[in-house]
Image (cartoon, rainbow, N blue to C red; front, side, top):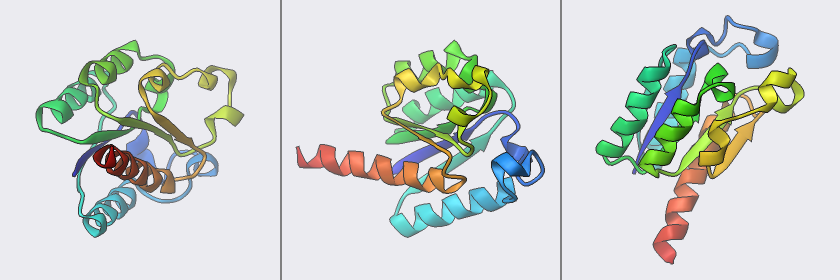
Length: 149
């Protein structure tokens, strides 16, 4: 199984940016944890981060062309603004989980809208960086369920 883990703007600043919302874990520590978890589960994880919307669109399409089984995406601020990301996820038809480290539903009004959510089969918010591991588990469960039907 191959899963793309895509992170949007400012996620490279984990551990520095607003620790009250995002915690003290660094981005590299998060990636190390995801990769270790993937190896433990027998999954190839392709981890990417960009502050540029077009890069994220390119990687969503790459996931399709590279035969990925699913996508875990934390689009950051693009959650609330990007129809391009929504269209990209819809166009590849890969199972996708939207992840947010903080509880976006308890934050500012503008963070209540997620354009991407319409193309995702699951959204995980407020579970800290462990939400990424939960998203991987959700994709594994979805695949297992599909194989039994």
